[in-house]
Amino acid sequence: MEYKQGSNCDIENEVLTLLDHIVDECLQVITQMQQFATNRQQQMTLKQLRSRQRENFKKFLASVPSLLVGPCTCVYMCCWQLYQLDGIKAREGPQLNSKLIKFWKSVLKLCENLRTLTHHDKNKWTEGEDIG
Image 1 (cartoon, rainbow, N blue to C red):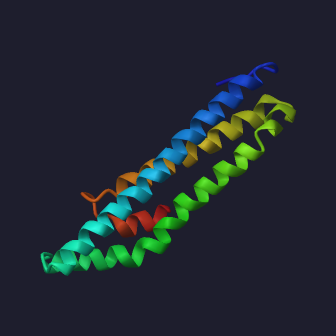
Image 2: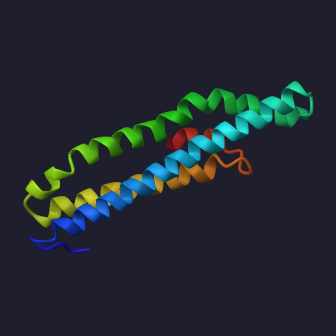
């Protein structure tokens, strides 16, 4: 998408939209993980988990610290970008703005992939660690 010199408002709107989607995805990742942990913990205390489910839950618990780094970092970067939003106006040249948009789109894609891999139906915690 080409940006003209006077379209800073368009750039800001696109960045804000991307940041909003990124934060939503990160929230979904964390919520999914919390729900999974709560459900499995309850099942574990009631001794309702099969051995494969127990092993998967152990793998999940070992992956939690690594999995949380990605969403937390993304949310922190979004906050930083919001703080620096006025700096977009000061930038000269559409190339920098285009790179900024591409960067945030790639962050959004990463968050979407992480949400998919951490869904309770997928059980792909180690793959989520690799991208997170």
